[in-house]
Amino acid sequence: MTYSFPNIKTKLPGPIAEQIMTTDKQYVSPSYTRDFPCVAERGEGVKLIDVDGNEFLDFCSGIAVCSTGHCHPQVVDAIKDQAEKLIHMSGTDFYYQVQSTLAQKLSELAPGNSDKRAFFTNSGAESVEAAIKLSRYSTQRSRLLAFTGAFHGRTYGALSLTGSKIVQKAGFSPLLPNVTHIPYPYCYRCMFGQKYGSCKFECVKYLEDTVFEKTVPPEEVAAIFFEPIQGEGGYIVPPKEYVVRLQELSKKYGFLIVADEIQSGMGRTGKMFASEHFGLEPDIICIAKGIASGMPLGAIIAKAEVMNWPYGSHASTFGGNPVSCAAALKTIELLENGLVENAAKMGEYLLQRLKTIAPKYSFIGDVRGIGLMVGMEIVDDKESNQKDPETRNKILEMAFYEGLIILGCGPNSVRFAPALVVEKDHIDCCLDILEKVFNKI
Image (cartoon, rainbow, N blue to C red; front, side, top):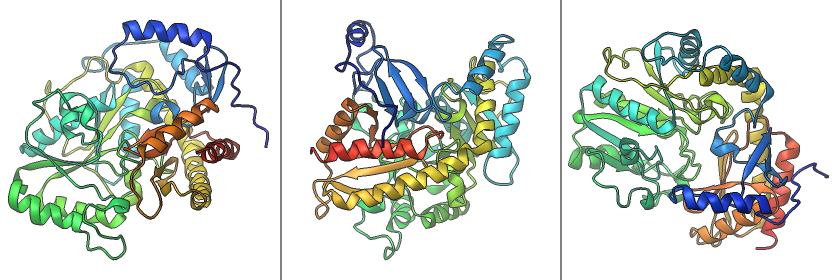
Protein backbone atom coordinates (compact mmCIF):
# COMPACT_ATOMS: atom_id res chain seq x y z
CA MET A 1 0.00 0.00 0.00
CA THR A 2 1.18 3.53 -0.79
CA TYR A 3 0.87 6.12 1.97
CA SER A 4 0.99 9.91 1.55
CA PHE A 5 3.17 10.12 4.65
CA PRO A 6 5.65 9.63 6.32
CA ASN A 7 7.80 11.63 3.96
CA ILE A 8 11.34 12.32 5.17
CA LYS A 9 12.92 14.95 2.92
CA THR A 10 16.16 15.78 4.77
CA LYS A 11 18.60 14.08 7.04
CA LEU A 12 17.31 14.07 10.63
CA PRO A 13 17.58 16.50 12.19
CA GLY A 14 17.33 18.89 9.26
CA PRO A 15 19.33 22.14 9.05
CA ILE A 16 16.64 24.39 10.53
CA ALA A 17 15.94 21.88 13.30
CA GLU A 18 19.64 21.76 14.17
CA GLN A 19 19.76 25.53 14.65
CA ILE A 20 16.72 25.50 16.94
CA MET A 21 18.08 22.57 18.95
CA THR A 22 21.36 24.42 19.50
CA THR A 23 19.50 27.40 20.99
CA ASP A 24 17.28 25.08 23.00
CA LYS A 25 20.23 23.27 24.57
CA GLN A 26 21.67 26.59 25.72
CA TYR A 27 18.53 28.04 27.29
CA VAL A 28 16.08 25.27 28.18
CA SER A 29 16.27 23.09 31.30
CA PRO A 30 18.37 19.94 30.75
CA SER A 31 15.81 17.96 32.73
CA TYR A 32 13.55 17.60 29.68
CA THR A 33 13.64 14.15 28.08
CA ARG A 34 14.06 14.73 24.36
CA ASP A 35 14.62 11.27 22.90
CA PHE A 36 14.37 12.27 19.24
CA PRO A 37 15.66 15.29 17.26
CA CYS A 38 12.19 16.34 16.15
CA VAL A 39 11.37 20.08 16.04
CA ALA A 40 7.64 20.20 15.37
CA GLU A 41 6.11 23.04 13.38
CA ARG A 42 2.54 21.98 12.63
CA GLY A 43 0.22 19.02 12.76
CA GLU A 44 -2.82 17.68 10.94
CA GLY A 45 -4.66 14.71 12.44
CA VAL A 46 -2.04 11.97 12.88
CA LYS A 47 0.50 13.80 10.68
CA LEU A 48 3.27 15.86 12.29
CA ILE A 49 5.42 18.17 10.16
CA ASP A 50 8.76 19.46 11.36
CA VAL A 51 10.45 22.79 10.61
CA ASP A 52 12.31 21.30 7.64
CA GLY A 53 9.14 19.95 6.05
CA ASN A 54 9.60 16.31 7.07
CA GLU A 55 6.27 14.55 7.56
CA PHE A 56 5.89 11.97 10.32
CA LEU A 57 3.19 9.50 11.27
CA ASP A 58 2.51 10.39 14.90
CA PHE A 59 1.51 7.47 17.11
CA CYS A 60 2.13 9.24 20.42
CA SER A 61 -0.25 12.23 19.95
CA GLY A 62 1.62 14.52 22.31
CA ILE A 63 1.82 11.71 24.91
CA ALA A 64 -1.87 10.79 24.59
CA VAL A 65 -2.95 14.45 24.72
CA CYS A 66 -4.15 15.34 21.20
CA SER A 67 -7.16 13.04 21.42
CA THR A 68 -8.94 14.54 18.39
CA GLY A 69 -5.70 14.70 16.40
CA HIS A 70 -3.46 17.66 15.77
CA CYS A 71 -5.39 20.90 15.21
CA HIS A 72 -8.85 19.42 14.65
CA PRO A 73 -10.65 22.21 12.74
CA GLN A 74 -13.70 22.18 15.02
CA VAL A 75 -11.52 22.44 18.14
CA VAL A 76 -9.51 25.24 16.52
CA ASP A 77 -12.74 27.10 15.72
CA ALA A 78 -13.96 26.67 19.32
CA ILE A 79 -10.65 28.06 20.62
CA LYS A 80 -10.78 31.04 18.25
CA ASP A 81 -14.39 31.80 19.12
CA GLN A 82 -13.78 31.72 22.87
CA ALA A 83 -10.53 33.70 22.60
CA GLU A 84 -12.39 36.50 20.87
CA LYS A 85 -14.88 36.72 23.76
CA LEU A 86 -13.03 35.96 27.02
CA ILE A 87 -9.55 34.58 27.55
CA HIS A 88 -9.32 34.72 31.34
CA MET A 89 -11.35 35.75 34.36
CA SER A 90 -10.30 33.15 36.98
CA GLY A 91 -13.04 30.68 37.77
CA THR A 92 -11.82 30.65 41.36
CA ASP A 93 -13.31 34.09 42.02
CA PHE A 94 -15.86 34.58 39.24
CA TYR A 95 -18.43 32.65 37.26
CA TYR A 96 -18.49 32.03 33.52
CA GLN A 97 -20.79 29.69 31.67
CA VAL A 98 -18.25 27.62 29.77
CA GLN A 99 -16.71 26.41 33.04
CA SER A 100 -20.04 25.57 34.67
CA THR A 101 -21.20 23.76 31.53
CA LEU A 102 -18.02 21.68 31.41
CA ALA A 103 -18.30 20.82 35.12
CA GLN A 104 -21.84 19.58 34.55
CA LYS A 105 -20.80 17.57 31.50
CA LEU A 106 -17.88 15.89 33.26
CA SER A 107 -20.02 15.11 36.32
CA GLU A 108 -22.61 13.46 34.09
CA LEU A 109 -19.99 11.48 32.15
CA ALA A 110 -18.22 10.08 35.22
CA PRO A 111 -18.91 6.39 35.96
CA GLY A 112 -21.65 5.48 38.44
CA ASN A 113 -24.92 6.97 39.59
CA SER A 114 -23.66 9.12 42.46
CA ASP A 115 -23.93 12.89 42.21
CA LYS A 116 -20.57 14.37 41.21
CA ARG A 117 -18.71 17.68 41.32
CA ALA A 118 -15.64 18.89 39.42
CA PHE A 119 -12.59 20.95 40.35
CA PHE A 120 -10.40 22.34 37.55
CA THR A 121 -6.61 22.36 37.32
CA ASN A 122 -3.97 23.03 34.67
CA SER A 123 -2.35 19.60 34.44
CA GLY A 124 -2.40 15.98 35.49
CA ALA A 125 0.04 16.50 38.35
CA GLU A 126 -2.14 19.32 39.71
CA SER A 127 -5.15 17.00 39.52
CA VAL A 128 -3.29 14.43 41.60
CA GLU A 129 -2.28 17.09 44.13
CA ALA A 130 -5.91 18.18 44.43
CA ALA A 131 -6.99 14.57 44.90
CA ILE A 132 -4.43 14.08 47.69
CA LYS A 133 -5.76 17.11 49.54
CA LEU A 134 -9.41 16.23 48.98
CA SER A 135 -9.02 12.59 50.05
CA ARG A 136 -7.26 13.60 53.26
CA TYR A 137 -9.78 16.31 54.03
CA SER A 138 -12.82 14.17 53.24
CA THR A 139 -11.71 11.15 55.29
CA GLN A 140 -9.72 13.00 57.96
CA ARG A 141 -7.06 10.31 57.47
CA SER A 142 -3.42 10.82 56.53
CA ARG A 143 -2.03 7.71 54.88
CA LEU A 144 -1.98 7.06 51.11
CA LEU A 145 -1.41 3.92 49.07
CA ALA A 146 0.05 3.79 45.55
CA PHE A 147 1.51 1.15 43.28
CA THR A 148 4.93 0.11 42.06
CA GLY A 149 5.30 1.21 38.47
CA ALA A 150 2.84 4.07 38.96
CA PHE A 151 3.34 7.50 37.46
CA HIS A 152 1.25 10.32 38.92
CA GLY A 153 3.41 13.37 38.17
CA ARG A 154 6.51 15.22 39.30
CA THR A 155 5.26 17.81 41.80
CA TYR A 156 6.02 16.82 45.37
CA GLY A 157 2.79 15.09 46.34
CA ALA A 158 2.38 13.44 42.96
CA LEU A 159 6.04 12.43 42.94
CA SER A 160 5.62 10.81 46.34
CA LEU A 161 2.96 8.55 44.82
CA THR A 162 4.98 7.87 41.68
CA GLY A 163 6.81 4.55 41.63
CA SER A 164 8.03 4.48 38.06
CA LYS A 165 11.71 5.41 37.70
CA ILE A 166 14.31 6.18 40.34
CA VAL A 167 15.68 9.14 38.34
CA GLN A 168 12.38 10.92 38.97
CA LYS A 169 12.98 10.84 42.74
CA ALA A 170 16.75 10.87 43.13
CA GLY A 171 17.95 14.03 44.83
CA PHE A 172 14.51 15.36 45.76
CA SER A 173 13.94 13.91 49.23
CA PRO A 174 12.28 14.23 51.64
CA LEU A 175 9.01 13.53 49.90
CA LEU A 176 5.47 13.43 51.26
CA PRO A 177 5.31 11.15 54.32
CA ASN A 178 2.82 8.32 54.93
CA VAL A 179 2.87 6.97 51.37
CA THR A 180 3.15 3.18 50.92
CA HIS A 181 3.63 1.40 47.59
CA ILE A 182 2.16 -2.02 46.87
CA PRO A 183 2.53 -4.35 43.84
CA TYR A 184 0.43 -3.54 40.77
CA PRO A 185 -1.44 -6.55 39.29
CA TYR A 186 1.09 -7.08 36.48
CA CYS A 187 0.18 -10.62 35.45
CA TYR A 188 2.88 -10.97 32.79
CA ARG A 189 5.48 -10.37 35.51
CA CYS A 190 3.68 -11.37 38.70
CA MET A 191 5.74 -10.33 41.73
CA PHE A 192 4.41 -13.40 43.55
CA GLY A 193 5.36 -15.90 40.84
CA GLN A 194 1.76 -16.78 40.05
CA LYS A 195 -0.02 -17.29 36.73
CA TYR A 196 -3.30 -15.55 35.99
CA GLY A 197 -6.12 -18.07 35.77
CA SER A 198 -4.67 -20.33 38.44
CA CYS A 199 -3.55 -17.70 40.95
CA LYS A 200 -5.36 -16.83 44.17
CA PHE A 201 -4.74 -13.09 43.83
CA GLU A 202 -1.79 -12.97 46.17
CA CYS A 203 -1.46 -9.29 45.21
CA VAL A 204 -4.77 -8.57 46.96
CA LYS A 205 -3.95 -10.80 49.91
CA TYR A 206 -0.61 -9.02 50.30
CA LEU A 207 -2.39 -5.73 50.90
CA GLU A 208 -4.71 -7.10 53.55
CA ASP A 209 -2.58 -9.83 55.13
CA THR A 210 0.81 -8.12 55.11
CA VAL A 211 0.53 -4.36 54.63
CA PHE A 212 -2.57 -3.85 56.76
CA GLU A 213 -1.43 -6.29 59.42
CA LYS A 214 2.21 -5.25 59.75
CA THR A 215 2.96 -1.74 58.48
CA VAL A 216 -0.08 0.40 57.67
CA PRO A 217 -3.14 0.65 59.95
CA PRO A 218 -6.06 0.45 57.48
CA GLU A 219 -8.16 2.85 59.55
CA GLU A 220 -5.55 5.55 58.81
CA VAL A 221 -5.64 5.13 55.02
CA ALA A 222 -7.32 8.02 53.23
CA ALA A 223 -7.09 6.70 49.68
CA ILE A 224 -5.46 4.36 47.25
CA PHE A 225 -4.29 5.94 43.99
CA PHE A 226 -4.95 3.47 41.20
CA GLU A 227 -4.40 3.63 37.43
CA PRO A 228 -7.13 1.45 35.88
CA ILE A 229 -4.57 0.83 33.15
CA GLN A 230 -1.04 1.59 34.24
CA GLY A 231 0.42 4.08 31.77
CA GLU A 232 4.09 5.02 32.17
CA GLY A 233 4.62 1.72 33.99
CA GLY A 234 4.13 -0.23 30.76
CA TYR A 235 0.49 -0.02 29.55
CA ILE A 236 -0.46 -2.82 31.93
CA VAL A 237 -4.07 -4.01 32.09
CA PRO A 238 -5.14 -5.53 35.43
CA PRO A 239 -7.63 -8.38 35.70
CA LYS A 240 -11.20 -7.25 36.31
CA GLU A 241 -11.35 -9.47 39.39
CA TYR A 242 -8.54 -7.48 40.96
CA VAL A 243 -10.49 -4.25 40.64
CA VAL A 244 -13.58 -5.91 42.11
CA ARG A 245 -11.57 -7.06 45.13
CA LEU A 246 -9.97 -3.65 45.52
CA GLN A 247 -13.43 -2.11 45.72
CA GLU A 248 -14.41 -4.66 48.36
CA LEU A 249 -11.39 -3.71 50.48
CA SER A 250 -12.21 -0.03 50.02
CA LYS A 251 -15.68 -0.56 51.43
CA LYS A 252 -14.43 -2.82 54.21
CA TYR A 253 -11.83 -0.37 55.51
CA GLY A 254 -13.39 2.93 54.49
CA PHE A 255 -10.65 4.32 52.24
CA LEU A 256 -11.31 6.07 48.94
CA ILE A 257 -10.34 4.88 45.48
CA VAL A 258 -8.75 7.62 43.40
CA ALA A 259 -8.62 6.58 39.75
CA ASP A 260 -5.79 8.27 37.89
CA GLU A 261 -7.32 8.45 34.41
CA ILE A 262 -4.99 11.16 33.21
CA GLN A 263 -3.72 8.95 30.38
CA SER A 264 -6.49 6.36 30.15
CA GLY A 265 -9.49 8.67 30.28
CA MET A 266 -11.40 10.75 27.73
CA GLY A 267 -12.21 7.97 25.30
CA ARG A 268 -8.78 6.48 24.79
CA THR A 269 -9.77 2.94 25.79
CA GLY A 270 -12.99 2.84 23.78
CA LYS A 271 -15.04 4.03 26.72
CA MET A 272 -15.02 7.56 28.12
CA PHE A 273 -13.16 6.29 31.20
CA ALA A 274 -11.11 3.11 31.56
CA SER A 275 -12.80 2.52 34.95
CA GLU A 276 -15.95 1.56 33.05
CA HIS A 277 -14.26 -1.58 31.70
CA PHE A 278 -13.94 -2.83 35.28
CA GLY A 279 -17.27 -1.76 36.72
CA LEU A 280 -15.44 0.75 38.91
CA GLU A 281 -17.08 3.90 40.26
CA PRO A 282 -14.12 5.79 41.73
CA ASP A 283 -14.59 8.18 44.61
CA ILE A 284 -12.31 10.64 42.79
CA ILE A 285 -11.14 10.64 39.16
CA CYS A 286 -8.07 12.56 38.01
CA ILE A 287 -8.11 13.66 34.38
CA ALA A 288 -6.02 15.86 32.08
CA LYS A 289 -4.10 14.98 28.86
CA GLY A 290 -6.86 14.22 26.29
CA ILE A 291 -9.55 16.37 27.87
CA ALA A 292 -8.98 19.47 25.70
CA SER A 293 -7.15 18.26 22.57
CA GLY A 294 -3.86 19.86 23.60
CA MET A 295 -4.97 22.90 25.57
CA PRO A 296 -3.69 22.92 29.19
CA LEU A 297 -6.51 21.64 31.37
CA GLY A 298 -7.01 19.07 34.10
CA ALA A 299 -9.73 18.24 36.57
CA ILE A 300 -10.81 16.00 39.38
CA ILE A 301 -14.34 14.64 39.40
CA ALA A 302 -15.49 13.42 42.81
CA LYS A 303 -18.61 12.10 44.41
CA ALA A 304 -20.49 15.09 45.80
CA GLU A 305 -20.34 13.60 49.30
CA VAL A 306 -16.53 13.41 48.98
CA MET A 307 -16.00 16.89 47.53
CA ASN A 308 -17.03 18.53 50.79
CA TRP A 309 -14.10 20.87 51.39
CA PRO A 310 -15.09 24.40 52.48
CA TYR A 311 -14.98 27.82 50.87
CA GLY A 312 -11.39 28.90 50.17
CA SER A 313 -9.74 25.56 51.01
CA HIS A 314 -8.43 24.92 47.50
CA ALA A 315 -8.32 26.96 44.31
CA SER A 316 -6.45 27.66 41.07
CA THR A 317 -5.97 30.95 39.24
CA PHE A 318 -5.76 29.41 35.77
CA GLY A 319 -7.58 26.10 36.33
CA GLY A 320 -10.71 25.97 34.17
CA ASN A 321 -9.48 28.71 31.83
CA PRO A 322 -12.32 29.74 29.44
CA VAL A 323 -10.39 28.91 26.25
CA SER A 324 -9.35 25.49 27.57
CA CYS A 325 -12.91 24.78 28.72
CA ALA A 326 -14.26 25.64 25.27
CA ALA A 327 -11.72 23.27 23.70
CA ALA A 328 -12.75 20.56 26.17
CA LEU A 329 -16.46 20.92 25.40
CA LYS A 330 -15.81 20.58 21.68
CA THR A 331 -13.45 17.66 22.34
CA ILE A 332 -16.13 15.84 24.34
CA GLU A 333 -18.68 16.50 21.60
CA LEU A 334 -16.35 14.90 19.05
CA LEU A 335 -15.62 11.99 21.38
CA GLU A 336 -19.31 11.29 21.91
CA ASN A 337 -20.08 11.61 18.20
CA GLY A 338 -17.86 8.81 17.01
CA LEU A 339 -14.30 9.06 18.30
CA VAL A 340 -14.79 6.88 21.40
CA GLU A 341 -16.37 4.25 19.18
CA ASN A 342 -13.49 4.61 16.70
CA ALA A 343 -10.97 4.16 19.53
CA ALA A 344 -12.60 0.85 20.44
CA LYS A 345 -12.74 -0.34 16.83
CA MET A 346 -9.27 0.79 15.76
CA GLY A 347 -7.76 -0.33 19.06
CA GLU A 348 -9.03 -3.86 18.53
CA TYR A 349 -7.67 -3.84 14.99
CA LEU A 350 -4.26 -2.63 16.20
CA LEU A 351 -4.15 -5.19 19.02
CA GLN A 352 -5.08 -8.12 16.80
CA ARG A 353 -2.57 -7.13 14.13
CA LEU A 354 0.16 -6.90 16.75
CA LYS A 355 -0.80 -10.30 18.12
CA THR A 356 -0.50 -11.71 14.61
CA ILE A 357 2.94 -10.19 14.16
CA ALA A 358 4.31 -11.04 17.63
CA PRO A 359 4.99 -14.79 17.09
CA LYS A 360 7.34 -13.95 14.20
CA TYR A 361 9.83 -12.12 16.43
CA SER A 362 11.60 -13.63 19.42
CA PHE A 363 11.93 -10.24 21.14
CA ILE A 364 8.20 -9.50 21.38
CA GLY A 365 7.24 -10.94 24.76
CA ASP A 366 3.74 -9.60 25.33
CA VAL A 367 1.10 -7.52 23.57
CA ARG A 368 -1.69 -6.00 25.65
CA GLY A 369 -4.09 -3.11 25.88
CA ILE A 370 -7.62 -1.81 25.57
CA GLY A 371 -8.75 0.59 22.86
CA LEU A 372 -5.98 2.89 21.64
CA MET A 373 -3.86 2.27 24.71
CA VAL A 374 -1.76 -0.65 23.54
CA GLY A 375 1.63 -1.83 24.77
CA MET A 376 4.22 -4.22 23.33
CA GLU A 377 6.85 -5.60 25.70
CA ILE A 378 10.34 -6.23 24.35
CA VAL A 379 12.38 -9.11 25.81
CA ASP A 380 15.63 -11.00 25.23
CA ASP A 381 13.68 -14.06 24.13
CA LYS A 382 10.28 -15.61 24.76
CA GLU A 383 11.66 -18.33 27.05
CA SER A 384 13.46 -16.11 29.53
CA ASN A 385 11.21 -13.04 29.10
CA GLN A 386 14.07 -10.94 30.43
CA LYS A 387 13.50 -7.23 29.91
CA ASP A 388 15.40 -5.78 26.98
CA PRO A 389 15.37 -1.97 27.18
CA GLU A 390 18.27 -1.67 24.71
CA THR A 391 16.35 -3.35 21.89
CA ARG A 392 13.23 -1.38 22.78
CA ASN A 393 15.16 1.88 22.51
CA LYS A 394 16.69 0.78 19.22
CA ILE A 395 13.19 0.09 17.84
CA LEU A 396 11.99 3.56 18.82
CA GLU A 397 15.04 5.25 17.30
CA MET A 398 14.97 3.29 14.05
CA ALA A 399 11.24 3.89 13.66
CA PHE A 400 11.78 7.64 14.06
CA TYR A 401 14.27 7.74 11.21
CA GLU A 402 11.68 5.90 9.10
CA GLY A 403 9.17 8.64 9.90
CA LEU A 404 7.18 6.95 12.69
CA ILE A 405 6.92 8.63 16.09
CA ILE A 406 6.28 6.20 18.93
CA LEU A 407 7.35 6.29 22.57
CA GLY A 408 8.36 3.82 25.21
CA CYS A 409 6.73 3.10 28.53
CA GLY A 410 7.99 1.11 31.46
CA PRO A 411 11.59 -0.08 31.24
CA ASN A 412 11.15 -2.13 28.05
CA SER A 413 7.75 -1.60 26.41
CA VAL A 414 6.60 0.27 23.33
CA ARG A 415 3.38 2.25 23.66
CA PHE A 416 0.85 2.90 20.91
CA ALA A 417 -1.25 5.97 21.69
CA PRO A 418 -2.33 7.56 18.41
CA ALA A 419 -5.04 10.18 18.18
CA LEU A 420 -8.57 8.81 18.30
CA VAL A 421 -9.09 9.87 14.68
CA VAL A 422 -6.63 7.18 13.53
CA GLU A 423 -7.72 4.99 10.59
CA LYS A 424 -6.85 1.46 9.46
CA ASP A 425 -4.45 2.74 6.81
CA HIS A 426 -2.51 4.61 9.49
CA ILE A 427 -2.27 1.48 11.63
CA ASP A 428 -1.17 -0.60 8.64
CA CYS A 429 1.47 2.02 7.83
CA CYS A 430 2.71 2.03 11.43
CA LEU A 431 3.03 -1.74 11.54
CA ASP A 432 4.62 -1.94 8.09
CA ILE A 433 7.31 0.47 9.29
CA LEU A 434 7.78 -1.50 12.49
CA GLU A 435 8.16 -4.79 10.64
CA LYS A 436 10.75 -3.14 8.43
CA VAL A 437 12.58 -2.13 11.63
CA PHE A 438 12.12 -5.55 13.24
CA ASN A 439 13.67 -7.27 10.26
CA LYS A 440 16.83 -5.18 10.67
CA ILE A 441 17.32 -6.03 14.35
